Image (cartoon, rainbow, N blue to C red; front, top):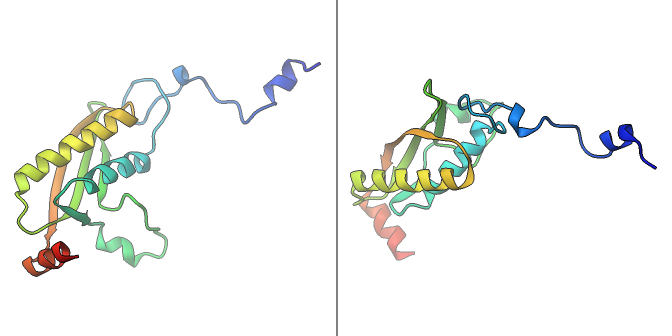
Length: 144
């Protein structure tokens, strides 16, 4: 018959109840969420928006052998003093895309995805257009 000590060690490492764990994004109580997790969800939402060809990660990252390629390249997550999270998305945009409309659509999709999957509050969502495909690239993509 198992005693209290046996039950204590029967599973994985004991974890504090969610009420005792603070997030890195504010004073709310709940499990901590890594910036990498948030950036991955943001990157997926941005890539799913028509007009976004790809995300643009920093060229300096490729110079260091200590960095690894992640699915969230091109997304920067910053904690804000007000308890929210600011998001920067660096993207390559298709030729002929109306950028203000694209920025609104990207922000809408990012907010929907993050609020549906994580319990954090987003502050600013900023789209940086780092590159625009040329007209010949856009024609080649339409043909394929």
